Amino acid sequence: MSISPDQLIPAGLLPADGRFGAGPSKVRDEQMEALAQAGRTLLGTSHRQPPVRNLVGSVREGLTRLFNAPAGYEVVLGVGGSTAFWDVASFGLVQDKAQHLSFGEFGAKFASATNKAPFLQASSVITSAPGTRPSPAAEAGVDVYAWPQNETSTGVAAPVHRIDGAAPDALVLIDATSAAGGLDVDVSASDVYYFAPQKNFASDGGLWLGLFSPAALERAARIAATDRWIPDFLSLQTAIDNSLLNQTYNTPSLATLVTLNAQVEWLNQSGGLEFAAARTAESAGRVYQWAEASDVATPFVSRTEDRSNVITTIDFEDSVDAALLAKVLRANGIVDVEPYRKLGRNQLRIATFVSIEPDDISALLACIDFVIGRG
Ligand SMILES: *Cc1c(COP(=O)(O)O)cnc(C)c1O
Image (cartoon, rainbow, N blue to C red; front, side):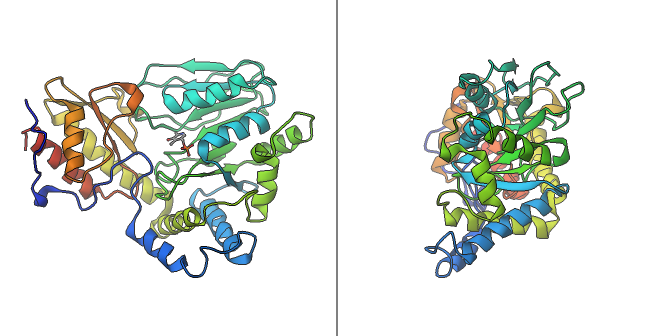
């Protein structure tokens, strides 16, 4: 079926907000109001003085509450986003050897980071094809097990759990960049649950944050006391020391903290993770049900239990040119539903993060049907 490149979608079908990207993702208007309010009082002021330190404290407390963090867990943050955290963790958390699950772009990148570190043993990397996921397995000599809770490049979600038979002091590191604040989790099943603010937290990028268990804090201190060379900017112990004082080692983006804090407050006031997980399940369910019912679309992830509730990936039959479809949607103000660039599939990727209204997801699906002539 042919899609007309300059097709106009009737205004009545369009979603109220056309942002469905995997990150940076839709920022809610209320977050922008919080930013405007901070404009004269907080933006443009020192990050070493009480106004900004109280804001960092509010983010740390709000996240502790949102994730129902067990006693002894600390929220640690630093500048550089999740990608920087992979290097921070390679230097400051892996003692000798890491095991990684690699089932998409992001799991693979952390695996590559530890694997290249000259002071570590070669990493153990368990891979599976895009759209599927492998499981971690206890392995002698491994002191860090790492995987993403949500593989943003493919739309596969993986459970967060301890590993039977792993060394008692082995740490579980969960890349929750796109999962945190949108998927349910028991953080006590992980030692570091880390993320960046530009996905479910609907803020901007450039920060990393993590909930650290007492065992992870202890591991960081132990490695920091050895003679391993660690660049100052990537020192986890420095980040921990600063975080406990509600500061960062170097200057953070204050606007990012303001919009992050507004989102954490909104989530806590709305019912916390339970609210968030129910809302993303509702939105993702609409996408998957629509695809299951369509004669030209199918969910890319075949195992229903592996399908993510925050990132949905939908394959199209050859008769529908998904790239052209995304282009037409973009011209009509519906943006960022292109698939992950390296996946190379005839696909749309639709984020169903907590900020996105389920009814806007339904509107998007109606627009897709309209463009492909199924409306
Ligand atoms: C977006 C994303 C990253 C990268 O985050 P940056 O803050 O850009 O470094 C890492 N892991 C996952 C799972 C992601 O979704």
